[in-house]
Image (tube, rainbow, N blue to C red; front, side, top):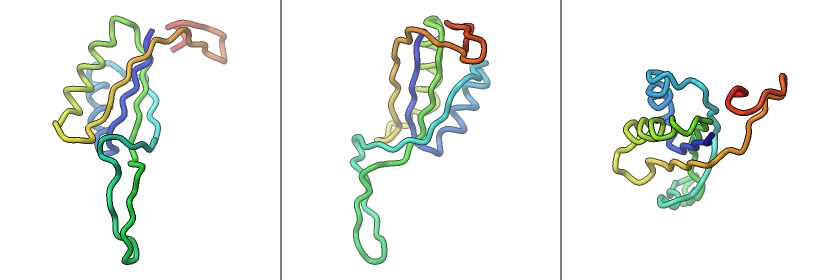
Length: 112
């Protein structure tokens, strides 16, 4: 099993979720996050003062998937999110040792 973390702009999460649903991928966790990368924040004017917002608001979509589904999920995310602009986001793929459903004690992929 693998955990796929996709971090992107807020305005992209709806089309990403729809693309996953269309392909039968329905189990995911969506989290509000903040971070700093190549964009290095943005300059805003607040009450006449210039302020640099260092942390950019983003959305993280997390999916636990079987090994054979990882490439398909990655390809859907890349096709849906890539605009070629700074700030499109990141995809991180991590191995998962186990998942346990607290209510039943099931573990492994059956717990998802």
